[in-house]
Image 1 (cartoon, protein in one colour):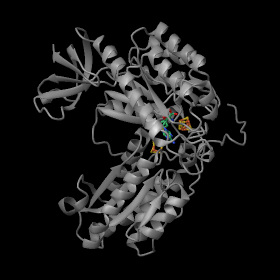
Image 2 (image 1 turned 60 degrees about the vertical axis):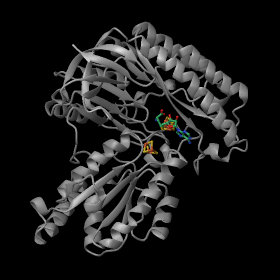
Image 3 (image 1 turned 180 degrees about the horizontal axis):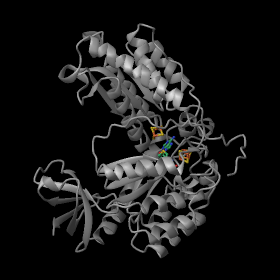
Image 4 (image 1 turned 180 degrees about the vertical axis):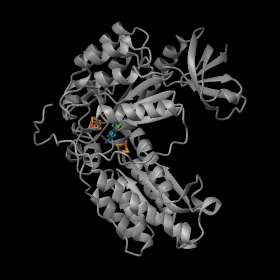
Length: 479
Ligand code: SAH
Ligand code: SF4
Ligand code: F3S
């Protein structure tokens, strides 16, 4: 194994068993206090976990809930009945932070009505010290914050509050890997599986490397063991997660993401496999080959473009050109002609001229994505792009954003129409929102597919025939 480390490549740091077990003992202490007060079984105190942000946060929240259960809480979806409220925040754009702060503000009245309520805030927003300080100063009803590398310390934090040891607002947990934390999953058939944490890319607009720390990969053994357990528990749709899965294993030295996904896909069982996210600079031929030969890996690739202009890509520190990006698209389509493609795009990055924006529009016409997630650039404190002097006025960004959506909607509709008349194998996921006679599922592409069915099929694969296509969804009948 290659043990060489460089200044920007921290050695993976797996927390020792003792560190984790210390937290389990704190959890037992908390559970014992509840028990002493007769709060067990039906009377157990409730914990409400609220999640903002990406799938990584969703996965973290499953561990947050797992720890709450270890502390003797029962999970609730109603904050009004909770004794422990844990908000898992996001910082990727200003809007995400505003939303989290406003929700936290709304919980003040719950604490006023019941001083026993404990409110803790975790996630990317509070991993920035200035936000942790702001909560300490201006949100006196919040008891503690926990950064993204300190989720495993929740039992210690809650035990400290119950013992009257005072509020805690220190962040700066070292990047680590905490194995063996219990997970509470609400749905068995769909599962997130983190393969790595952190990001080393420092795209100039992005806060994530500051809130998630440096890249660190879990070992293939730990990931495969968790995958086997998920499959045994009924998982049918597993998403391997990392901010840039293509650099998985670099810190371990002797393994790649392509090898990892191949190994997971080769596990016994009827399940399908997705992964997020891939950075185009690291998308390998090996990964494309592994996908093409493995039916269990879905025919969908999320490949964030961010901008179609080389000038902007360079200012974003993305380290690829539009041509290099398009080369990957061609390889994907020649290996898997029907593959669905999706992307993230930022509009109005500092210095984006009209011709830069038109280059992005040209890429949308050329690639013809099934879907895009587009965002108006949002300056993030502490990132290089926030210091750039040529910020694009908001009305220009908004006008560009709207033009882009209109173009993409046309393309999405045309792409969806290719499915009409086809038979697809779909995982039935939930009762359709707004039509209780229907069930919504997904095929390989993340497009929702609505079809009339008995809710009993939820959690199973069913075969459907696509009858109609919309911009954002497909209609089908069960066959
Ligand atoms: N690691 C993933 C996703 C990170 S965040 C990746 O590299 O693709 C998800 C998306 O949010 C990014 O792809 C980007 O399009 C968008 N984003 C990140 N920072 C942003 C900012 N400051 N303003 C607007 N959008 C941003
Ligand atoms: Fe952010 Fe870039 Fe890392 Fe993605 S790859 S998380 S956009 S810095
Ligand atoms: Fe948000 Fe953090 Fe994810 S900033 S998008 S929750 S990594």
